[in-house]
Amino acid sequence: MKTFQLTRATDSAQAIATAAEATTAQQGAEIRFIGGGTTLIDLMKLNVEQPQKLVDINRLPLDKIEALPDGGLTIGAVVRNSDLAYHPLVRKNYAVLSEAILSGASAQLRNMATTAGNLLQRTRCMYFRETSMPCNKREPGTGCSAITGANRGLAILGTSEHCIATNPSDMNVAMAALEATIHVRGTKGERSIPIADFHVLPGKTPQRETVLEPGDLITHVTLPPSAPGSRSLYLKLRDRASYEFALASAAVVVTVANGKVTRARIALGGVGTKPWRSTEAESELTGQPATEDVFRKAADVALRGAKPQSENGFKVELAKRCLVHALKLATQTA
Amino acid sequence: MDNESDLKPVVSAAEGNDSVHVKLKINGKDYALDIDPRVTLLDALRERLQLTGSKKGCDHGQCGACTVHINGRRVNSCLCFAAMHEGDEITTLEGIGQPENLHPVQAAFVACDAYQCGYCTPGQIMSAVALLKEPCGREDADVKEFMSGNICRCGAYPNIVAAIQSVRQNVKPQKAG
Image 1 (cartoon, rainbow over the protein chains, first blue to last red):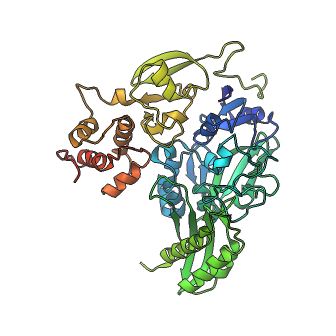
Image 2 (cartoon, each protein chain N blue to C red):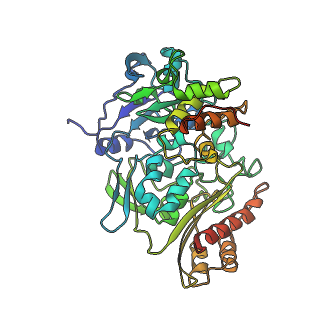
Image 3 (cartoon, rainbow over the protein chains, first blue to last red):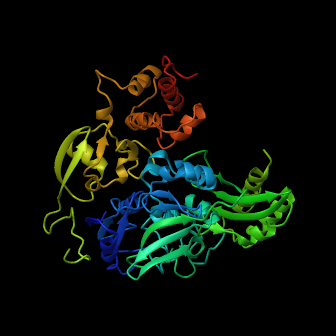
């Protein structure tokens, strides 16, 4: 690990001004905010991340979960994953979010990991984590080892010829289906970013994963009120029953009236280079009977653009079945 | 404040001097030490304070052997910088029980033969003690899910679950199977 200066932020303005001195907020950032450290310290030990300065944001007053007047919810940036997953309002109104978080990592890591940190969780692609191997995300222009290498766990949606790394987060998938908004304070003030616009596709610049710029501090995330009569759930398929990343997962928020789907929000995990919202699948479902045939058609639509690699072709069918099963579970009558 | 953009390093390596001054509260005792900012809580415990109950397995938050409690919650101490934990209440295996005064979870591990080589056992016990206060369901399957962050390469899992359940159910510890 490279040595660094550790500072502790006592107010957001200080933290932002300090971080704004970096040339990038993306891969290679010289200055990093540190929350739970579960991703960052891991990658610093691997020399994948080599910040010269860390700004500890754990003492900033960004640790609250509160109901909003409109019926929504606001979640502070340093709220721990376990606190979010077990919060009564989350369990009651946003079951998909609670289930997604509890399906990820371990109890210890969930006690450490923060909301904002999880939004910025880095890929588990082994070539990204191994500095002796070429990787366009870690070192732009060196090539993608995964396309011709071990790619069983990697993405089939949103890939480019430069990068096929999967976004590994479960929380992000639920946040995408819940249409979360990410609130950022930066050197130019505050702005709100819909989660659909927060993560960017790898394209020719896989080192850029989000729209964040130097100095941008995620302060909180808001969720809109849960849709009346909707049911939500998270279904995760993986190589072992616990403490494993998704091969495919589905977050669904669906409302059924008189046997027909009146509203659906669909996002897939484990298969995309970003949390994969499928508005196409949502359109396919809306107004249709809540039957397996309809769910299957929606799943076909969601995976229409899939581009399998040498080892992960199975993910296309796996993701479809995952989504179909999630929709069946979410729409079955009690 | 003179200049908001000047964040003063609370702890930093001064030029020509790699160490920083840190105060830690561990098992109710205060410790002051000079460490490199890169030192993890796990390394500070083991290498500087001779609190070797916490073990280093993977050093990447994947095995759970380093599990300690910070402010009553279990965490992976290998993924914590020691210098970030001034003011926190840190509890290690040494603070849970001692040979002449075992914690009920430790006694249950002995009674249930819940280990083989014993290397993962401190982390298992720290997780199990934390689990007693977490919203874990009643079934063995619930315990397995809550304990999945602690790997045992000897495969002592059935007896680990039995030990934890015996404490939760307040019954005489018995080996699994």
